[in-house]
Image (cartoon, rainbow, N blue to C red; front, side, top):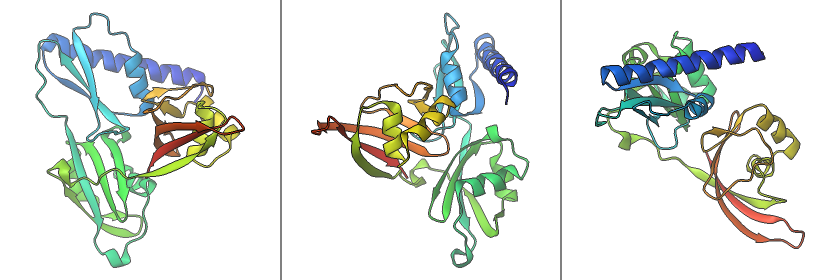
Length: 256
């Protein structure tokens, strides 16, 4: 996508968000966006809010969701309505003949049904089971039409309680870095070279606490949540002592 197309896309996005905000304000009702990716969430946070009379909150169906809906709430309205999000659990029809499926496999099967990407939230894959967050209007269609992922026959079912969701698992990553600069820390997190991480940062694929960071010299703080498109997500847990070579001991919790 060239610069002109990017600017046009951002302008259309801003216009759409302002329309949702105006509808909420003038009609006095709650309005929701479709699922927004990390870049769109960052653009939403950057929009001017001076005196709009509307509060904006986001949620993706579970804590730490990357793709989230925005709720536009008029100041006079007490927010009680649930987000229009459903969660579908997808299991193989036969464990014995099931393939090892990835996030890309599940997403591809769903999009091949003709569903737009912005109607689908996060997809959590654990073993041979996946949990798919979607707009509630899409749930009946998915339950009826999604019967195969790659070569595996699957059975989708609607979850009625978020307690049935898998807990987010993390693995500890620790090591030493020359500084807590963003490029150094994500290189450790994903066992990659610092130079390869710089291209991801400059390419707009790295987010800290939902904010797109383009500077490889950005210093992380304990508690920061870092998302790298195509790589994964981690939480910056701890800065320990300093080695004789003036390197920092750090530990991270990388989401599996």
